[in-house]
Each structure stands twice: as structure tokens, then as C-alpha cells.
Image (cartoon, rainbow, N blue to C red):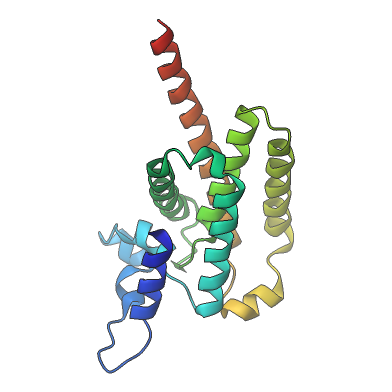
Length: 193
């Protein structure tokens, strides 16, 4: 469903005689959000700069979902809820902490959050690989904050890689994992009582 929405929005934004500029109405744009267009906090994550950007983000999404499918396969609604929360928190985080970032599109920030969430859930289940995954994503984001993104990726997506979104996504994923664990533990404790 998530992939279909992203593909449909991308296809709808391709210039045609009946062109409806999706990007103009749904991309994350700091100034427009400040003027009340709050839906952009969420919808900006669903848009992409070009076909390569879309394909890379969707491939990353499916790899992460399959990597951590044990956490979602019995509860697909959990993945949808997490996806929406991460997208919204991503937009809010960018808006509050990076006011100089005036425009943003893409799933990459949310993907970092989804990856971090999955690593934390792996740790919670006792999988040692979760620690390696978490250390890896933290190291990647730290590297990007200091050195910036790869020039080849920037050229491929025809836009600056918003490494700020990766940091915000990582933090949001960790926060969602902590909240989820607290809620799950509370329900587990209440069932035992």
C-alpha cells in the first residue's frame, strides 16, 4: 500500500497535458507549513525528486521490512501505524530543529527511523544482531553529519541529500521504539495482574 501511494504520487507528478503539480501542493516546504499547510509534514515523505530517488527509497523500504519482518508479519497494521508516526515525526522534527531546510521530499529520513526501530525491537527480542544494526545506523548518520552525503547519490537523485532528515529519522525511530516498549511492557504487566 505504501509503495503504491509513493508510485502513484510520483506518476501523477510527471508533466502531461493534464499536469497537476503534486510537488507544489504536497512537498515539505517550511514556509507553507508555517502558513498552516500542516499536511506537508506528512506528505513530503511520500514524494521523490526523480525515478532513481523513488526506486532507491522503495528498495530500502522493502529491505528494511523484510529484515525486520518478524516484528510486523502478524501485525501489518503496526507497520502502517509506525510508518505514519515516523513520517509525521520526521516532518515535525525538521520543522522545529532545521528551519533553514526550506524544502524536502523522500522516504530516507523515515527509513532511518524504521531501521533504528527494527534494530531496537531485535535487541528487545534478544537478537545480538540488533546491536550491530543499531551501531551501524548510528555510525552512518554520524558520518553523514560530519562529512555529508555521497556526491554520487546527490547526482543520482538530482538534489542535495538532506542528511538532517536521516538524523531526525534515527532519533524518531529510537523514540518510537522506547515508547512502543513501554506500552508493550505496560500491557504485559496489566495482563499478568
